[in-house]
Amino acid sequence: MYEDKKLICKECGAEFVFTAGEQEFYASKGFVNEPQRCKACRQNRKNAQKPEREMFTAICASCGKEATVPFKPREDRPVYCSECFAKMKG
Image 1 (tube, helix red, strand yellow):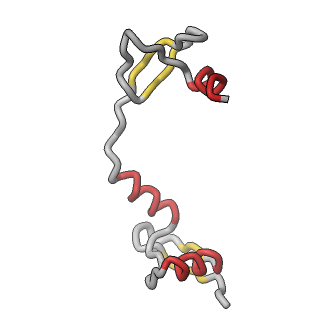
Image 2 (tube, one colour):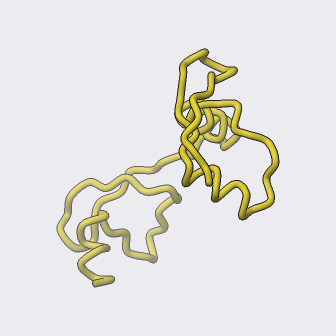
């Protein structure tokens, strides 16, 4: 029913494929317009709308390595690096 289509990105001018699967997905969601930007340009546009996250440096309470976290560490709560946090969660 659907066939792959080659489209031109209105942002960068690159050719990209609007696959049959993507067309089926768009139809199932009720979208009537084809995408006008390639995947990279869509992602860049989406990320540009997000404010830059402020990151903070802390020392992991478990292994002692330096960790970067998206919140301001407090003295009364332990902070873990991503590896130690994953071990505790798993």
